[in-house]
Each structure stands twice: as C-alpha cells, then as structure tokens.
Image 1: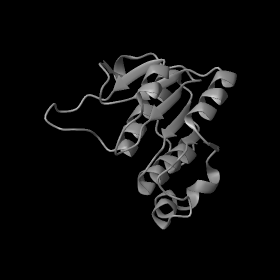
Image 2: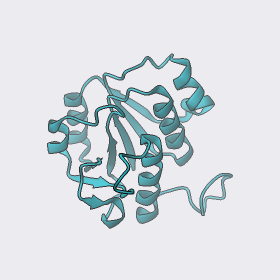
Image 3: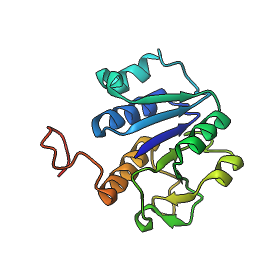
Length: 161
C-alpha cells in the first residue's frame, strides 16, 4: 500500500500524512510542485521526528509519477469529493497507490482520467469535505484492513489490533 499526494499545498497536512505513513510502514509519494519547501517549520513540526522513517519518493511532475507508476504496475485509487463510489464499497489490493489531491484545488482532469478508481468518503451532504490528513488516515486504514497488509498483530506499540 502506498499514499501519493498531488501537489500538496498545506505543510501541516503533508507532515501529518507522512507521519501516518511512517507509523504504518506505508510508502509515500509527493508529486511536485508542492506549495511549500520541506524545510518549512510547520511541515517539520507536523511530521516531528517521524519524517526520517518514511519511505518517501518525490516526483518532479505528474508525468514523472505516471512513468514510475507504469513501471511499477500499481493501480491508482483517487480519493475525491466528486466520486460516486464509497471507499467502503471497494476491493483494495496491497499494491494500490491511494492518491489525494491539493487541499485548495483537488486534482486536474488529466489526473481524474488516469485514475483506475475514484472513491469518496461519504459525509453529511450539507458539508464540503474532510481534512485531507483525516481522509488519508481513514482510507489507508480501510485499505490495510482489507488487504491484511498492515502492522496489526505485530505487537508494536501503537498498532491497531
């Protein structure tokens, strides 16, 4: 299981998601350009000392990410408020890449078109969206549960059993 962030623009959210990746041993991808520098203190504060434990790959552009994905043979699962299918009604595979868009603008139409699946987390109709870090945690939790590829049962402190 892997998480990819498309041109993230809020450093605190990115740091939080990378901390999640470190704790769950999930690889992470940042698709540039990001809206901040990784030396940003808010990014560092949110990621804390976990950032050194993340398997992180940075891609210079969407096309470079797609080149990597084609070589790796991974399915792309996009989380978007514009999807019709719930993340709970989807069969995940351990090799999936879960993609999350920019907090302020989502993803481009080219990204939507490239996705093998488009999912949403249902929320109250009168509300706009969940925070991207919360969405990533819910999505990766369900994907790991379904694929039995998480750290559950490993006996490590902080693991979910």
